[in-house]
Image (tube, rainbow, N blue to C red; front, side, top):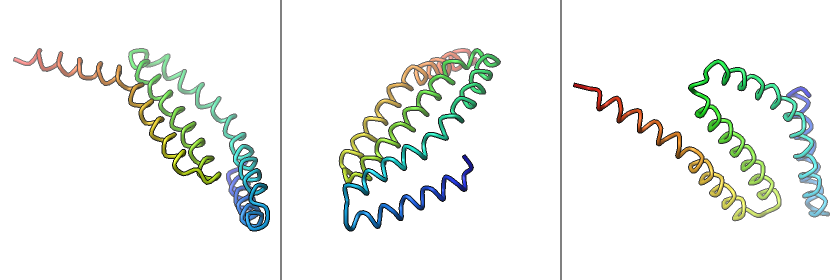
Amino acid sequence: MEVGALVGFGLIAAVLCVLLRKTNPEYAMVVALAAGVLLTIPAIGQVQEILSTVFALTAVYAPMQQAITVLLRAAGICLLVQFSADTCRDAGETALAGRIEFAGRICVLYLAVPLITEVLQMILTLLQRQP
């Protein structure tokens, strides 16, 4: 789907939600969730193309495989956390959205620890080689 169509659909869904929220707030939430899912579906096809490109890069740059894997996983966590937190905010649960974002940040940091350790070891190795 084209970006213009996605934006148009999103704006129409937003207006519909605003109108429904006055009379039937429960329907407004259902419409918002359904629109969110429908807006996300076209992106899934593009994820396949992105992954195939990244896998091709990983094959070319084999020494960077660990870093690329960490970056991909971190990006996936960020996207999932953002979608979940936004959905919670749409439902009026801002505190829960904040906790989801906090948990996502911790997961990304935990994921990066081996990579950070490797970088620090490389720095120490380079410093020890200096005369």
